[in-house]
Image 1 (tube, helix red, strand yellow):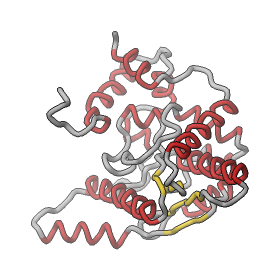
Image 2 (image 1 turned 90 degrees about the horizontal axis):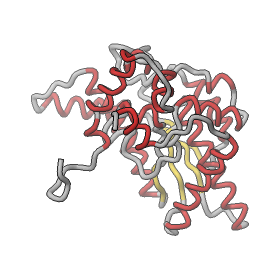
Image 3 (image 1 turned 180 degrees about the vertical axis):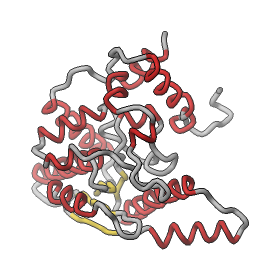
Image 4 (image 1 turned 90 degrees about the vertical axis):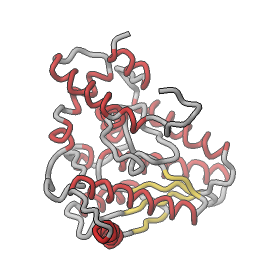
Length: 272
């Protein structure tokens, strides 16, 4: 089996989707998780103002609204977490997303002091980290905050990674890659946009150019620049469509290079 077929089979991305059906599938997935875990009362997601976090958060809120209506009481709660590093340049995008999501509760935690404290502690121990590694510090601090909130609110952290990011390893290990459930993992970037359109999301949100904004030395570098390939090409690859050999090679190199991000920690029972 060729590597592309192996990857396509792994994530089972459909070439054609019905957004209405996919929205229901995502909500049912979250509902079933909550039914099986009766002690869970809240869903927590970091909202950045981008496509994936906006979609995930909206699905969480719709799930909570559905269950509370069925139970005729406000048992479940969705908590949106704003996690700026200092002054957030695209703060208006976050405001726009939250207006669309209408979360039960919003918590704002500025991570800059925590990250700088970590950087300083490492320096005091003789370790000076690069700007890239500092970016990973930011992602892990954001996830740490979400888990602290989840622990205090009987909640779980809901991930925002889609298939296009997951397969290329475009996430931080134990940062945005460390979550409890991932309702949109079976969708590529293009399909996430289709779901947002169906949910009547603002066009300004689903047309926003994806930027991770973790590196200070490259503040405006887009995801596609960092990856070296467009999301359109990654989506086509996942749909088992034809793309040039050059682009296919880039995607497969990214997949193989980041295998460790998708694997369980190595132990005696796991053969590599």
